[in-house]
Length: 142
Image 1 (cartoon, rainbow, N blue to C red):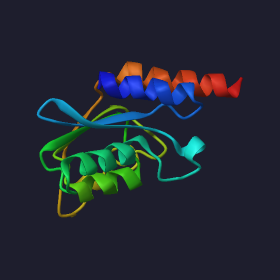
Image 2 (tube, one colour):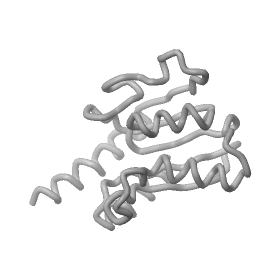
Image 3 (cartoon, rainbow, N blue to C red):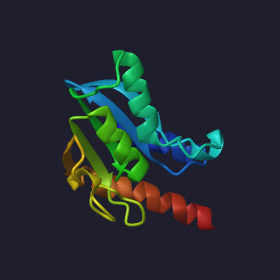
């Protein structure tokens, strides 16, 4: 999660909403991602999507059943769908997203009868992840 936080800080420094993600297998980081929607001018450029794409490329396949995703913010519906489709074993997130969170805040897509249900761990380094977002939006409002 520390690496995801570092990536979130990078995103925030570039004017992006500070969200970072890593995919790990056996404790080793396989791929990294950070929010790039504004600079990339693309709605698909979420940290999770970038990390999942990188992991698929690094491992040479779309099934990430041996991998875990660590992300600073609760995944949205698009990212939760990508998590299900990539068969990630486990998702660990820091801060909840009361507006778009799809791992329990608005809805929990992992509880629906899809063909894959990743393990879910929430609240890891929650305060630090939440502070990154709060500070970013406070600065933006000024």
